[in-house]
Length: 210
Image (cartoon, rainbow, N blue to C red):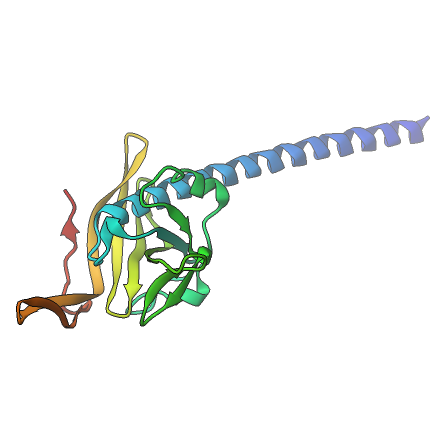
């Protein structure tokens, strides 16, 4: 009889432990899901900001925008294209009706002299990139990002985002480096003269976003 009670006690203890483990696992999955959703909101707000504010030549006349995420911080003058990954399908759905169309970075080929070329059509587009999210507080984060149009048209910017009324928005930018084309008048026509580069040492303060 004593052995039966011991077996029953062991069974009840095991069942209780299993329930606790399952509850902890469910809570962990829920927390991970919430964290992923929060990260998607941050990246979405950042990409939307990059779409409307960049120094590219094409801007919204590009054939398409391509998105790329990075797990590592960029080097001094930007990201290593080969180390980027595509956003998830679920994330891309939020830009389904955007004009220009928004696509994954893997749908384009980066040819530095020529630019960002669609793998199917060969049309030129813009590549927008973001690095890992660095929490500053519960309602403030920093994320490195920028655009790439070609060797002479690219940027590396540190963005600060704040959560206001449960929505994330870009509040400031700190330009680390930018390479952009400069056009000059020559013989009545515009020609590309050179590339201008501003590095971290040239710009110390973030530019307030209004």
